[in-house]
Structures are given as C-alpha cells and as structure tokens.
Length: 354
Length: 218
Image (cartoon, rainbow over all chains, first blue to last red; front, side):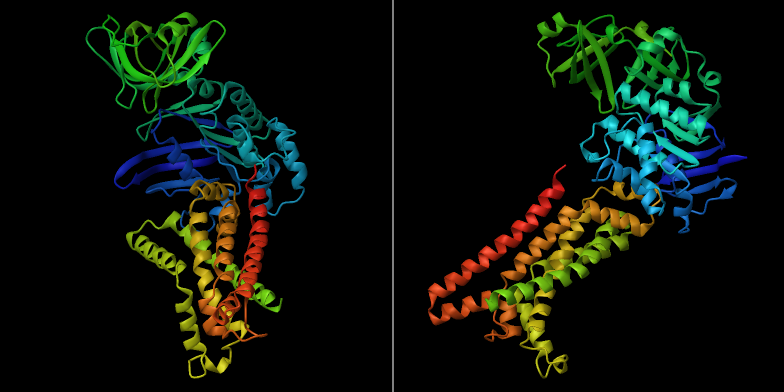
C-alpha cells in the first residue's frame, strides 16, 4: 500500500500556477526523489506534503487516508513525519536542546538517550553543548537532519538538504539518508537538483519542470547512464539544466533560466542537463571577439587558490554562477579580485550533455 | 528610605503585571502578521499596531488625569476608594507601561523569522507550542521591553502625583519627593534623591543587561 498518494494536485499563488495536475504515489519504504531546476515547484510540493501550505485543489492521502487541510489535526499527521528545509533553520539553543525539541513537544521519555543516538548517527558527538547558531552550514544542516530523524518518522521530507554545503558534509548526509531508508524502512521524499545524488539514492525519480511532472521512473530509464569520468569531476560545478531547442546547424540552444542561453554542439530537443568543464572556459578582462559561441559577462564572487591552479566563481546572473579554472600565472597577471568585472567564453563543443 | 521602597514597589508591580498582560498580547499581535492575508485582516492589524505605537508615548499626566477622574469619589470607580493609594499609582503606571511592553514585544516577535514558527510546526509542535518557541527566540527583545517599561515607570512623576497625591509616608515616591523638595528650595535633598533614583535605576538595568547579554552570547 502506498504511504503517500498525491492526486491531481494544483497550487496557485495569486493567479500563477505553481503546481499543475501533480499525481504520483510513493510506496512505503521507498526513496523517492524529485529532480528539476530551481523554481520547478519542488519546494511547494514538499511544503504541501508537510501541511505548511494548502493545495488549491487535489488530494493528498497518507496511508490511504485523505488529508484534511482545514482541521486542527495537522499536528497528529506532522508528528509522523519529519522535514528538512533547504535553508537550515535552527533555534537559538544548544545542539542537544535543538534535537530534543521535537521529543519534548511530544512529551516523550528517554529523551537524552535518543538525542545521543541520533547525534552519533549524524557524526556530531561532542557538539551537544554548543549553541546551534555557531555551527558551520554543513554541521547545522546535520543538526536539522537529526531533529527530523530523532522521532523516527515514518515519512521523511527533504527539500534540497545538501544544496548549500560542502562535499564532506554532503556525503555524511547522503550516508545517513541511505542507511535510514535501508535500516528503518523510512519512506523518503527528497527534492534535489543534484543529478548524482538522485542517481545514487533514489529508487524512483520524478522529473518536475514548470510545476508539472514530466516523467516518473527509475533514474536510468529517464536519464540514461552518464559516463563515469564526466560524473566524477562535474560533481558540483557548472551543471545546468533546461529546455534545449535544436537548431538547423547541428547545434542546440539551451535555456537554463534567468535569461541565460547556452549554445551546444549537439542536436537535442527537450529537457537536458549539461556540464561545462571549468578548464574549458576562457577569461578576459575585455569583451572577447572570438569564435567561441558562448560569451557572458559577470562578476567574480569567489576565489579559491589551489595548489597549481585558481578556481573562480563568476556570477553571470543572480542564480547562475560559472566556475572557471585558470593557472596561477594568469590569475596574477590579470590582477583579478572579488568583484572584478570579467568576460567568459567557451565553445559550443565544450558543452557536454550528461 | 521608605520612599525608595515605594518607588520600587509601585514601578516593579506595574511592570510585573504589565509583563503578564503585555507579553501574551504582544506575542499574539506579533504572530498575527504571519497570517493576515486578507485585506481586512491586514487593515485591522495595521490600525491595532498604530494605536499601540501611539499609546507607547502616552503622556503620564494624561493617564494620571484619566485615572483620577475614574477613581475620584464621584467617579465611576469611586466606590473602590482607591484614590491616593499606592494601588492607584500602580494602576496609573500599569496603563502607561502595558503599551510599551506590547509594542516592543510585537516587534521582537515579529522580527523572528516566520520560518522559525514553520519549523516548529513541521517538527510537530501545536500552534501554542510554536508560539512559545517564537517567544523564546524573541527573548532578547522581550527583555528590552521590560527594561524600557521599567525605565519609563521609575522615572515617571506626573501621573502618580495626581493619583497618589504625594502624601508623605504613604504615597510619596522618589520622583514626587524631588518635586516637593525642589519647590521647598531644599536643592541638596532633591539632588540626593535624584542620585538615589539614578543609581537605583542603574543597578536594576545593570542586572537586566547582564541577563540580556548572557542570553545574546553564542
């Protein structure tokens, strides 16, 4: 029997349709992942499942029972689930008090032992007495995960839980999620735009775009099998997704949102995920006249000096950042610093589909 | 010394009772802005808060006058026989202090991110439990409301002069005594009382500030 069933769900915000006719069901013990670009409606869908928002129309059923969004009984259902938000929210109290909170409001016993166990699970032993607001982003998100897990929920809702944190913390969280799903048979619904996470963790994936579910199925059925090398080093950089439109000259234009269009040397229409290797991008302090098909202007927002090279984060639009890798020598010669206005260029053939 | 104690007793009682009334009301009004989507609700919300903000600057003398008119022998509450008693003075300061506590609490609670409340609900809190948590997160601001209220009460003179009557050994406080001594030309006495008043206010604020800073440290 499915744990969560969503039927013909619509959500409107002042006339704008955020979710359109969403229908899916998640089996008990399933790890279900929603993938899709920012603004696709993933967060809204999860918030509706957590009863923080009401659907405009449509039905949600938990364990076969229709959820009544108008009642005061929300608390009863919420107490069976846990949610982790993309933006980490913790209370101004110690780590252990934060984790104990969901137990205290339920009036549970043996709180200390449960808190201890879950903090060990997320590898935060020794952090008990620290104020939660002093933690790093990754640690804080692990506390948030502990808060959601400490009550041993039947259903775990995760809204891009690893979106803003570093790789080490991401792997800890992924490990915890996968073991919780495996050992406790917890049903998990997670939103992400990290394709690798979706591939590694999900039993099934729903591709959601513009408020609609475009496809549901096993990851490979939808996206095929990405090649290993691309996968490994593209893990977090320069991965974009959007609608691709094939043109007549063996190229495609991919609209990755925010008014940014990337030209690629392949012919494919429909939703694609693409990657541009940071080494393939050329930087210039002046407008570039070249054969490169993709030229953007942006500002440097981050500089990471590595052993042999320098990685720069260039903000082209509010939510569109490119990572560019250049040699230390050119970094010095170009006299770049945070805030520098910069032009970047890459060939259509540097755009790989993944 | 008697007058110092009375000052403390009257202002302390006013602030204490004021906190019991003002903090819950302020929390309720502060949380309201999370919801009010309908235009009417928003209008009511804005009006209510504007009224509270106006009352935060209520002139004590006016409060004193109104309370006097209510409590005077021929007034509607004259039968209570409260005029010229410390109770009348507490009532006067209470009326002054409640809007301050409500107003500052509203903004303290309102400045707690709405996501905090949602998070609490998401973790399974009832509405009341979530409200309590928001209030807890706003505790620094709430303490500020108490400090502001106490500061206003202890230094107030016009209101309690009218409703307390400044009767020696009975309703004379530090501030009203200063007025009398000044009128009598005993400036040395007036200044001494002023110094006592100031140092007392300082000690109490020192204590409250230490509590506040301790809570703020992370």
